[in-house]
Length: 114
Image (cartoon, rainbow, N blue to C red; front, side, top):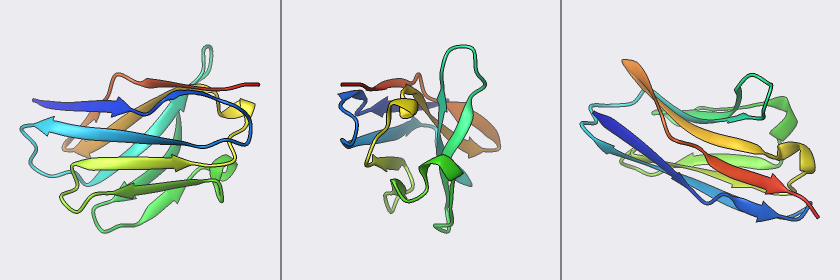
């Protein structure tokens, strides 16, 4: 059993920054990819950013140049540095890890509003 726990969400003004963290615990064998997704009510969950075990990163076009994904050396934690946040970034952010099957965290709310 693998658990993913996100932290770091909150309320921030437009132009502000937040750093999300995701910690994996449990029976971790190895993850091929870890990433962040987000979802707003009535819309599909969408990929924000992902990073492979080799360090290759992928970003949604809407966050390129503003968000940065990174991981720790043990590949048990993944981070999302979010800068120049916009109201349209408001969503519940979910951590996902792929290791044979997909594991999801419970989500953390990010609200960008003045």
